[in-house]
Length: 98
Image 1 (cartoon, rainbow, N blue to C red):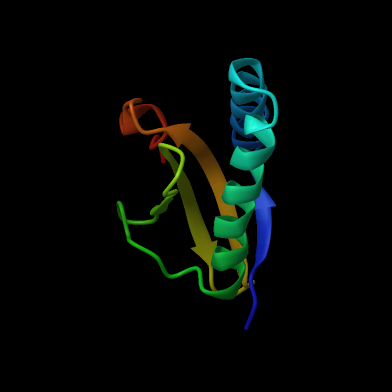
Image 2: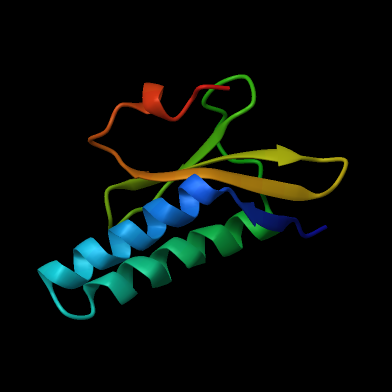
């Protein structure tokens, strides 16, 4: 069964910030980041049971870009909640306040 995706406001902001940053570095790079990110999000839609990071939070790292998707799932509602999409150089403590 497919899961629907719910983006938390922080995740949306982080995604937009990252797209803008990459586009400033090189034209079209933001679009490459967006494309890869949504390939991984599409994978979560089909199978959200990736690595468990903490009691509730799961993670899925991107391959080309140094980012990690932090999310949790509600199996009863078939929803995956994207909490954060952040650069791997950042501390996870900032994102795991749940």
